Amino acid sequence: TERPAPGQATPSTTQSKPMLRALAGEAVWPPPMWLMRQAGRYLPEYREVRAQAGDFIALCTNPELAAEVTLQPIRRYGMDGAILFSDILMVPWAMGQPLRFAEGEGPQLAPVRTAAAIEALDPAICAGNAAPIIQTVRLVRAALDAHAQKTTLIGFAGSPWTVACYMVEGHGSRDFAAARGMAYGEPQLFGKLIRTLVEATTAYLLAQAEAGAEALMLFDSWAGTLSPSQFRRWVIEPTGQIVRAIRKVNPAIPIIGFPRLAGPMLAEYAQRTGVQCLGVDTTMDLRWASGAVEAHQALQGNLDPLALVAGGMALEAEARSILGTMRGRPYIFNLGHGIEKVTPPEHVAALVRLVRTG
Ligand code: CP3
Image: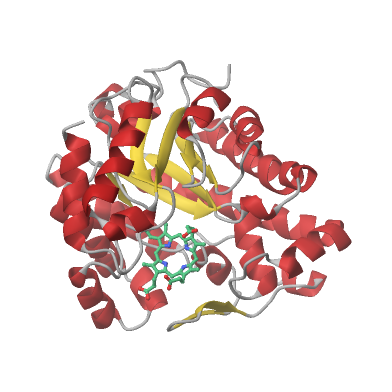
């Protein structure tokens, strides 16, 4: 009873947008498409604005410039989805955790590992440090509406588990041993951090929806590092809490969950979080994923970003195989992870032509 019936998930005014139709459970063909990290360093026009903004955080907190880079891939390729330009780590940054993006070494944060450090975080980010990001959503939505675009505006956040990984570790990692160690060794303390993130993320996503986001996505890039019992506790449980809290206030907005590298845990994630759409990573067999989720739940993915770098016959073969498997079910074409910065923009153009001809 929690999920709207297929075709009734969105107001009729936006029902003609292909991505919203797919999210409402319709097998739209050719499928709507967008690419994770579609605004980014592979685009010369992005690098230009990025240089103008100074550093990456300055770009994320400048509504005019962030709106501009959000729209760049829409202008260039006519994507069906425009994803807000920001970063999952802007939530810990907005809560007061020092963050910097160092050239070539990825994000660096002052690790949060004590009760005092967790208590110092301020989850009321929307009226505070995250206000410029909410303003970006308003600007992008106004620009899309002004041109009567069929593009769906996607708001997003990181899932509590993945954001906590970076907060505890202090940087990227292959296995996030410090975060996983804290989750086992100090579950009360780690649970406090996760609850803080659930609260901040719920309010943040609701504020994006109110500002004009038409769909929401939760990125759980490191969901695949957990044992099944830990996955239930730190991925499914908090994600379900966020989904249910959002539905209480905004029952219509579709939510995409992306538990990357979840493997067979995808089935339980789909069932227990109740998201409308499942992001599927590159390693997953799409036929299996189709059987693992309900028929009305859309799938989104999962072209290998390296196939897009390679281009040519390899790209064509992979993309055609995905399209052949997904035809007839609610589906959104995408990559299985973010676009690589060495991707030639003309390969993206070739992919768009291929997908658009079904
Ligand atoms: O176009 C879009 O998809 C929207 C914007 C977006 C970014 N990051 C911009 C970005 C989104 C949705 C993200 C999500 C994100 N950020 C995730 C989840 C998805 C995934 O990739 O697994 C994660 C784990 C992050 C954290 C993050 N942000 C890392 C590890 C890095 C450094 C890696 C790198 O490429 O430098 C970032 C930086 C970042 N986020 C960039 C962009 C365009 C590059 C920064 C730059 O321009 O210098």
